[in-house]
Amino acid sequence: MNLWIALIRGINVGGHNILPMKDLRAQLKRAGYQNVRTYIQSGNCVLEAEATEASDIETGIASIIEDEFGFRPNVMAFTATEFAAALALNPFPTRKFDPKNTHVFFLASSPTAPDFNTMNRDLQPGEAFELTEHLFFLRASNGLGRSKIAARIERLLGVSATARNLNTVQKICEMTDS
Image 1: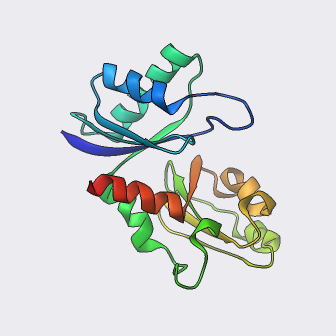
Image 2: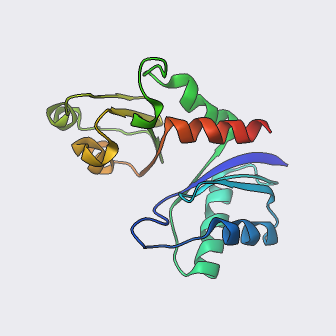
Image 3: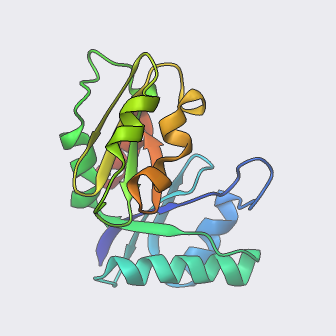
């Protein structure tokens, strides 16, 4: 069995795409996933599966949610090693910056033409960002909801993304160790 982290995008936000984690865990277990665990209500799953390709996990989970809950979310899956890289690559040390204000955007693919001009123009006081091949880090000291960059990140990068703050990333990594 292989250990996977699945991030489900756009659930339980503003009363839309309601997906109770207890029900999701039950459906994933019924589908054959093992040791299914979730963290908070925003679609963070740690599970084991025989699958060796992220796309199989992504399609499988999205299909289960569509069949059982009536909507099809975007799902991004990562091995535990790939996911832990987000902590290792974080350019904003947690001893200096509050981890709840540092967000990791997990990217569906590597951006080919990111709009750095607009990002730099829209940078708010207390914000900083860094892009790696498959991760975009945004420190938003005034909160993610106030960031002009965060609101338009997919358009600015030209790829699909889902974000988690560093506290959440850390907790999910801890779940993979247990």
